[in-house]
Image (cartoon, rainbow, N blue to C red; front, side, top):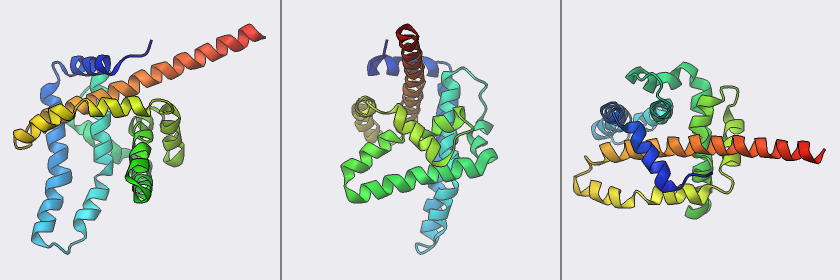
Length: 214
């Protein structure tokens, strides 16, 4: 039975119980590294290319943050060092995440809506890279697209359900996002976990129907 978005958010909150401190700290560290450093570079020299290069080098760190919430959901060992796991498999993680960014930008150049739809299609790629180490580049992206077939609207509505919280976070001068972002990331990890279960159930059903037919 498929979970509703409300149930997905509930499971995400349950996963964060007892882990909020670690989740907020992981999000803060990632933000400081990925956003603060480029800001300093730009302030010192607006013409400097280092901010763009730095953001590229931080792609495995963004991946590590998302996977960190999958670890929380699965009750695996947690340590801030896991944020940097992407650098242990740098080529595969970096190039795949880079391809996702490039494809999304190219689709967005056509029209905003196609770019957004593609971003939803590619949304599970980081988790697939973690669970399927044999996949990389287009193969991992295509697997995400396969899993997202017929599920893009559901993911969109899941994101949309956080709009009210985002508005409240703006009223806190942005500090509230340190709580909201872990909630969103945990919900995305839960969405992925449930989509995997659904996909496995679909495979079993098809197999059983094939056996009966024979």
